[in-house]
Image (cartoon, rainbow, N blue to C red; front, side, top):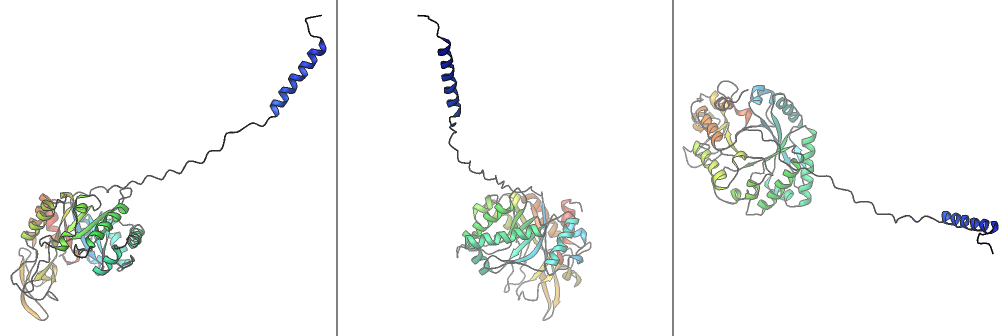
Length: 361
């Protein structure tokens, strides 16, 4: 028998091999099981305080003042203008006083190189109710940030002034400022400031400003209201002397640990009586000068309806210069309540401070 297969065997083997190849090629290819999509990566939120403005010169402009009556140079002397006020409602709504005037202030400030903040005040009851709930705090912050963007502002100033440890609003004030600070500081875009008491008197109001806020970075600076230390019964008492300025800065910086860069010393551009009612007897610095008061003095004899020839106490230029230098040495700025009460000539308190500090304008 031959060892070589016959041609028929070779043919049949080739057919079998071809058949096997065709069958294999027709088998369904098994695909890997589908994988679930990767979860979306949340965007990174950058929460950082904005750039420090250096030595702050803050001037309030109330809604009842005509900004056109304040010369442009007085805006140029400040690097922050606070428009006062927008009011907070109990449920978080906000109401801006004279919004058309806010637009004028924004335009005038920007033309003269100043940042513009919207300052918020309101009744103690409204602040307490709004801040007492996470829901109404969130709603309030959304309204605030909407106004900031709508008017092209640079920051927010909170003038609650009187949160208290006695009723628990110190806790909700802290929560509000932390949440608002985070919103302002997204991408280091907006500033947040707050007005606080002079710190002279111990108690529930002073203690409501917590160490967490003072030493944290949620609030960029504090406007220390080192004025209005008056008495309706004790005569010859100045409401804003050098001693109060020194006491205020010493308490907030040295006793409470507020960083120097966040401490702004408040200076009044008005005068108060002592030993009599404050109703109708306070006068703008410019009005005191108009009645013969001296830019070189801190008191004058003035007259208003019903109160002839009483003594009014204010800050003249020498005291303002000393306060400006005190703030330069110990703190990081000065604040004025309010710009419309200052003189607009060589007797200006703001001009005296800027000249002393060497600020160009």
